[in-house]
Image (cartoon, rainbow, N blue to C red; front, side, top):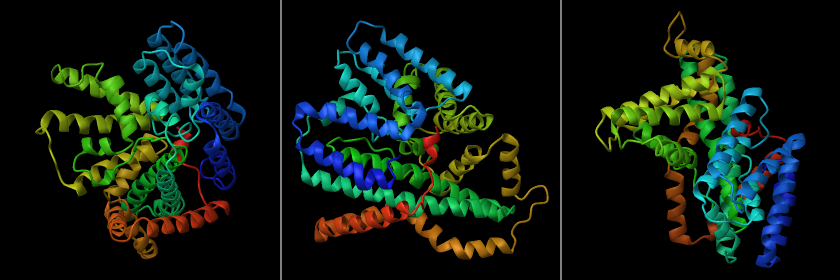
Length: 420
């Protein structure tokens, strides 16, 4: 079971929310713990025991005089070993980051049950976003606000629509264009993948934020229209921003950051991008992906003026080229793609199939590109200022019914980041 499933959205979520809303505050924590265990057991299958088992020593460290830094190092080692042997229970990557962040930032004693529930909280357990324990505590004591709940349902509907309408169709277009073998087809492949990755992951983040909001929790934003960025550094402040903040706080700053000269800055950036690459995967392509962005970010930071702002289109192109290493199974495949993209080695510039697929997908690709900008958000805000919240809530209900019907028919693919 996943957050995008008929069982969860149409059956379990309404039941969970209805029961939770009538419970006294003293019973909320236990209910969330039971919900989270049940959700993860249904989602993770045979490996469902692993994350609850890992959460026990973290919860005990919140009450007993254990060395939290040592435990954080042990968790990092467990993660590295699991990566090395290919044993990756669902949500392990995000769980380890949450647990290490908790151990290194929370100094006071905490209730073990609350810590375990925070680590296993069902909207965030599989794919984030990463958030702080203090925000979890605030959500436990939050006063019910029907307006915020309605807004959360709208957010869930938007995320579900992003997934089933944009992400999955872009994935189909990506597969179609990738079979062409021409320079124009390769450029379209890259465009489709860049947009697919954005809508797939930001769609999940919207769903998680929406589900958390239904239960009174304010989860952090993970995406802020990253393809509108004007530098690569700005892009990664807007893309998966909770991961970026975690790396900044627990890797970049402890190593000295940019406070001790260019060499220490390079070392800190290298550690950040090496950690990011390893967190995503152990293949050589992921390390090439990390090296590529390390070089770009280091060049911006050390060679360009502080606060540099370039043009959006060149930034988008630079970022998109990095995604080649992300979707390629090995370096040879990646470099073959680059050869086709830049029309090298006898590659055709275009063929008839390019024009046929462009004619089929062009309107949808244009709509997708517009949806990756703030234009529709700004339009929605203008409608709300003029007519109030009702039109947007009705539209959200329509999107939810459409998206749920599509998902119920088996018309959606798994989230890409569920494999990390």
